Length: 104
Image 1 (cartoon, one colour):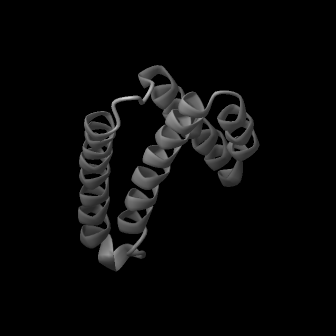
Image 2 (cartoon, rainbow, N blue to C red):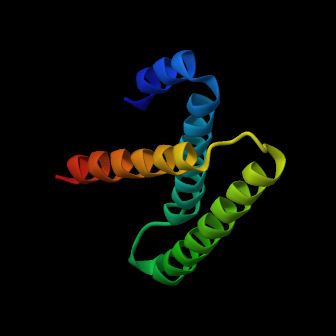
């Protein structure tokens, strides 16, 4: 859903579009890291492993997102912070809304 918007934004304003795309990728990377660790185990017998995996996934997601934001702003001086954070927020919002719809 965000891809067509990002393509148009990159075409109209390349730096802003790429900055927004970077924000989207940071959010997707963090969400994928969490999902990988959070859903490795299932079942009542593995409850301790499930909880440990959730904690590891959430801590790893937080650290990965912080590291990626830091690396982005340190390595790409032309990045537009507003566009990066708007892209991050829109990807987060879309993932949350779609996740809630999927659970219904």
